[in-house]
Length: 100
Image (tube, one colour):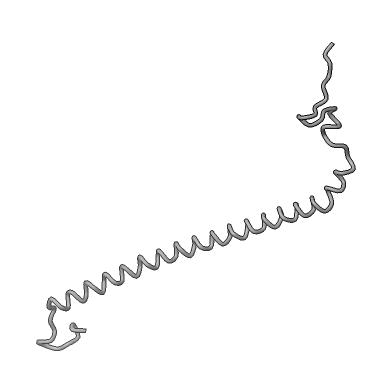
């Protein structure tokens, strides 16, 4: 603005240089803040994507547990327990085989 003033007012004094320097510093600060904002927004987008993926995985796992409880357990009850299939009992009442 002072550069457009005629004659005596057309000057470059200490105050004007300070204002120009401050203006440049503010522009640089704005640029840095805009870059930080862009990085933060990208990070937020990545976090939101990860959250959606985790929520989907949790939903699948919950569905798996529901299916297991509702359908598979009734089928499992019809089959003999593993210790019966292997001819052993639990540790406290284990069947003992004699070695010849």
